[in-house]
Image 1: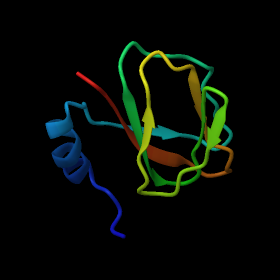
Image 2: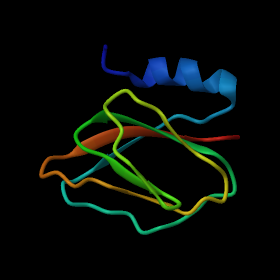
Image 3: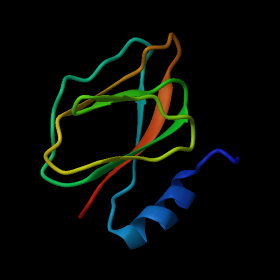
Amino acid sequence: MARPTEASVHRKWRPRGFTTNRWSDPGGNAWAVHQHPVSEIVLPVSGQVVLRIGQKTVKPKVGTEVDIPPKTPHSIQNPGRTRSQYFFGFKK
């Protein structure tokens, strides 16, 4: 599978009503539990990404989309030693 690009993700997500944002976290970084009023999608591009969505832990492979429903408590972390990169988008 080819590594997703910002342009390819944007073409896929825009018709579904999602924004396209790129993010990068250093190894060992962890975001606190939070929630959004709208749906969110996360798509790992490189490195390790672990999501906690409600009571479920998800370890998506690079190129695998993860859907986070609105108002669902969630967190994201990079348990690795190297930088992780991922796209995320919010429903408009």
